[in-house]
Length: 279
Image 1: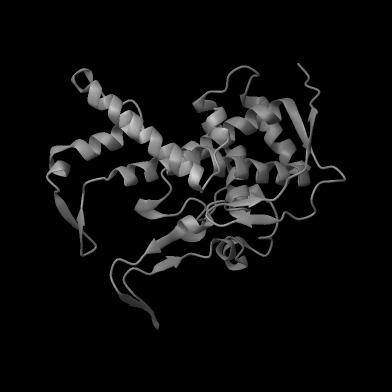
Image 2: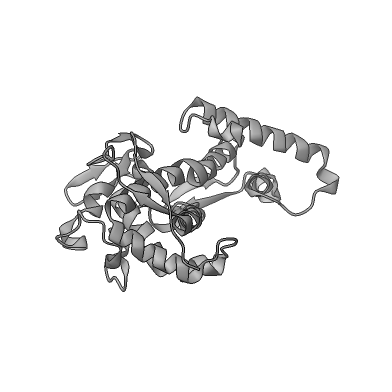
């Protein structure tokens, strides 16, 4: 864990970590191939994909009219491993920073979550079924991700074939990026209170599926979405079961954001106070 925490996310350190991990696992598989059992993690699955007979024969297929080889390279495997690391560590940590800030600024919402947590959770274990049942917590996390989408640039797509959209020409190889922040604050979609943190807007909501792009959309939607959401729910459930998140005199009036591939706050200042639980 110490190694992961020292990684400079999105930079050279991350690439070195993933490249080294893939190379090491690949060598271990080569040594123990005869005793190989079913895949045990994502790296095993990726290496299996590279090793399948049709991939070794450079089988090809057509996607959106573009000829593509199916074989995965070592670099592609390392890149996918990095995405899992990013989804499970960096962006989730940033999302938790945002949501703690929002809860400190909105104590009424925090109390509603705590009432739900107290109803469903004990202090020792919180099961998957318990997390799935806590709908207000789920709505609060989605609302936090609406207001502060962490992987804004992940919604970019490369044009595979030159095309024209309206009066705009997009050439093969060019990238198109969705403006997530503008979309997430559009009053025509989210109402005139789009600048407010209001989890209730997610209850029985009827809006276009593309109105919320915190994890992207379609077949290339973030593969770590469910992992990230489950991590956030679990952390917040344990945290709010034991503590109140309180704004202080040093708590930021507005967050200052930084980053490119992922968007993070420069700082979040809140205080944790032990709750007085009534048995």
